[in-house]
Image (tube, rainbow, N blue to C red):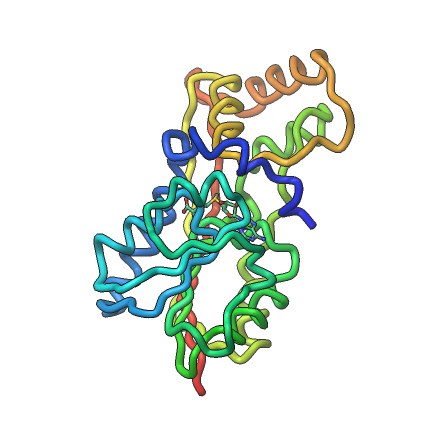
Length: 249
Ligand SMILES: C[S@@+](CC[C@H](N)C(=O)[O-])C[C@H]1O[C@@H](n2cnc3c(N)ncnc32)[C@H](O)[C@@H]1O
């Protein structure tokens, strides 16, 4: 499963400093929830809460009691300031049937291969008439790195899915999609090295398919620069989907 190949646990300490796009995704998801009239988030489960970028925003923007934060990476959870924390796989949630009114998750679901399995798990722990909201990285994220990795053998980009995959799975599992929005972002870095360093520190890296050498690395830098650099800056593309869904009883 792809979740086993990420490096989040190792990168907990530096994540907040480098997670620029994850912060944007979390802020946008909070704004979408506010715009939809959400005020009170009592009885909330946050999936993949990590060190709490999104958790802290929920706490400052909504009335809440406890947010139950779950994450696989122990080192991330240690940094999360919320008191109710459980280290677990979100595909095997250790909660009773109908425990939560709201299920939230920002920048996590792209790591889950089988979304249908996750929705069944969420369905089980959600109360009647519960709501859920997600920001998810979609296909097109790291477009440039993906192209150059395939050419040079250096690096390996997580295979991300299109929004249609998520929308189909929501419908299939009886969810009503109340809101959906997809937005593309480009961030610019001073150099390819700078981009790779930033990427490494977010922990969102996956293991290379084969052993790489200095030559592969140098080709990666050369091709990334020659194919994509704009006015001496290095672009990195992101594509984020925002989904608010509900479940009728
Ligand atoms: C990019 S971080 C996002 C953290 C936080 N939600 C935020 O907005 O900054 C992705 C998080 O998902 C967690 N994660 C990935 N797969 C998971 C799984 N199967 N079960 C639980 N947590 C998982 C990782 O450990 C990591 O903390």
